Length: 159
Image (tube, rainbow, N blue to C red; front, side):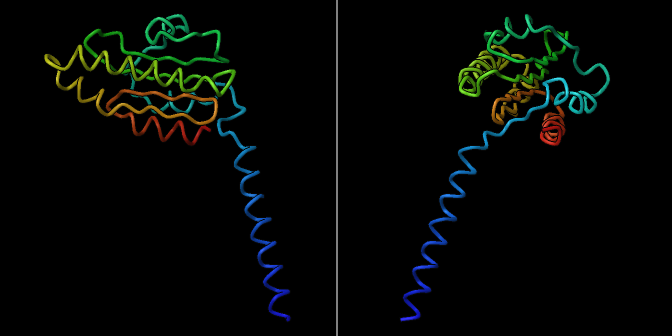
């Protein structure tokens, strides 16, 4: 008889724990409350000198075909050399529901550039193959660079 009582308590505890975990996952959307500039600052510090130059939000909108009105902030760096695919984009969105649209726009840009550089710039094509595209809540991170892993690590720490 005592065993049945303990079993009921164990089952209730497991059910309560399950619903607590589901509640935590549902209410935590990821991302950050920091501004996009606060998130980007440590990433920029990891960049090598003259690796990329800061570009405007309009440049980012034009390059990626994204609607900048859906963003809370954009940090976009790219190399000024047309033959260099090195670039980094961090976007904080107003609505995390738009992340799929922005990720698709970035993937389309990477695919287009792969098609462009595939036959005559194999080292640039290899960089595009190793591009990093990550979503954390309402933040989208994209980087194509020789040191993209280091830039992504700095980004993760900044969140």
